[in-house]
Image (tube, rainbow, N blue to C red):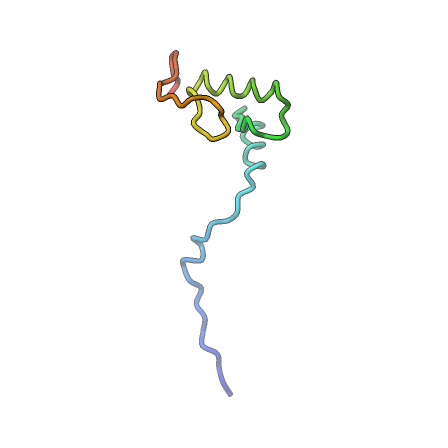
Length: 84
């Protein structure tokens, strides 16, 4: 009779990342802390909402450098009193 070798669980098994539901994390952040995470490319937004998101983002953080931004690259810092 063959006895299979004992299998010991690897401690590395606990280190495997678990998939994250990004939309659920965004929803929870908004509902619990009023933190909004949104891309101006989000298809759920209409044109005016996209423009508003872009305007707020540029005012707070400066111009974006992503490929869909459509403006010249700028390395200037945002104006005003930053919070962080």
